[in-house]
Amino acid sequence: MLVNQEKIIEALIETIQMVAFSLLFSAVIGLPLGILLVVTRKGHLLENLAVFNVINSIINIFRSVPFIILMVAIIPITRLIVGTSIGTAAAVVPLVFYAGPYIARLIENSLLEVDPGVIEAAEAMGATPGQIIFKFLIPEALSSLVLGFTIATIGLVGASAMAGAVGGGGLGDLAITYGYQRFDTTVMLITVAILVVMVQGLQSFGNILSKKIRRR
Amino acid sequence: MIEFQNLKKVYESGGQQVAALNGIDLKINKGEIFGVIGFSGAGKSSLIRCVNWLEKPTSGKVIVGGHDLTALSVKEIREVKRNIGMVFQHFNLLNSKTVFANVAMPLLLAKVPKEEIKKRVHELLDFVGLADKANNYPDQLSGGQKQRIGIARALATQPSILLCDEATSALDPQTTSSILQLLKKINKEYNITILIITHEMGVIREICDRVAVIEAGKIIEEGTVFDVFSSPKTQTAKNFVSTVMNDQIPESINEVIENQKGLQKIFKINFVGRSAGQPLLSQVAKKFDIDFNVLFGNITELQGTPFGNLIVEFQGTDSEISRAIQYISREKVSIKEVTSRAS
Image 1 (tube, rainbow over the protein chains, first blue to last red):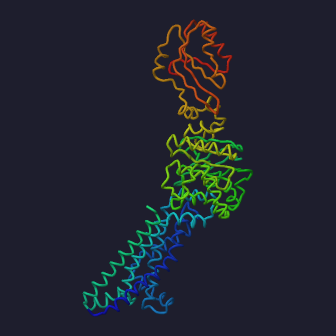
Image 2: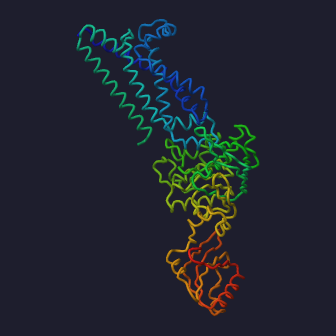
Image 3: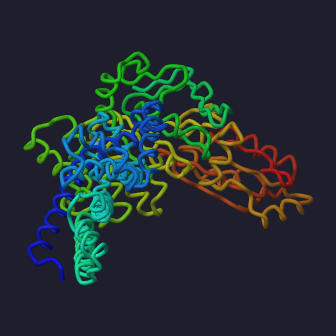
């Protein structure tokens, strides 16, 4: 094996950092977009088709560009924000561009599942749109939102491994540089195994949390 | 308390205009239980939703407690809504929140202090008979219990109007009856004006004071429950009345009527109020030289007044029968001869 244990742990930490930070920033961007996608649509709380159509199209554009291309395409933006296009911090920028719109869609889906009757009841009580969103829609969709975030996190684990291909660091980087380019099968297997365990753990955690919120 | 003036609501769907409400004029008095009955699609849902602005009318006026809603700002309408509770067919409770939190919701939105919320919610749960369910979640309750919670929630802000949107349509008959009794109790104890929309005539009969029949977005008949039940004018009203009060003559009786000949005549007698309690027929039998035979009958109670009809066969000479009929007509009953197939 061409790498020692320390190197693997370092790569693992980098992956976790990449996923954690990009999840955080994606959620900050995706959550309001997802909410807007729901409440500005036709017949909803704050119907505004112009806003809806713009957000909807932008999200579709970002979601249709393959991640590996997105990564390269937004290098100028990455440089502008992080100062460099190489390394873990730089990888977070394309990851956010990738996961933000994705999370917006997942949130949209979850919120649309909420019984319209609940919104009607809220309106009948004289709730403001803000109160309806935060006191009715989100609490009612929470269990489903948690599952959505689980999917997004797992997607980020996969994407962060790809970010390794352009020098983003992390487990993906390790697998490509040592496992693939230098034919070290052991490193390849170990990184894949770690990723499998991570994904399994995340999914189980998400399931349990969602179930706990749903109380069923 | 609630007044609709030439209210119209037009929906656009696929370039086509559909009029849900087609010029409604209706006045609902303070403290009464008013029922609006109609088939699905008649416009009753749109009508009730105009009262708390869940639907904005295309034209016309909605006046609630003296406020013309069309003239109010969004913020002012929110204030008016606090004075209107609403109960839904499918309860519309928050499944993610406990019974307590559900009932507390309107108070929370109105920024009532925590201590007061606690007191009020327990009071309400007591009132609807579910004090022990405060920490349960809606999915642990039966339909009837959920509706009780829905009612408690609707009453939280002490509104003066309660809107019931098919509140019992998803419940079984026994539960329906207990919910209706609860609504009656609310009306009596808190003097809350209740507007009910339903397609079940039984609901109207059981608790309403006045009723309006809606069809194709128009009120086609309106009056006290007693009047509409005892003498429905439109065919739709007649159909609704016959769903709970069978005034159709059964087939077997019809055969008897069809085969009638000679010295017998068949009459339908409608009793109203006090006359239902009088031994009218036996008096007639004593006074005149006729015999009678009750073929079919139906007596019910409307708003505490007995009401019923009897199909009676009179046997005797024509002159004797017509004298008897004259005598009966002087009482507070209506009588008419039944010929074959007609009722």
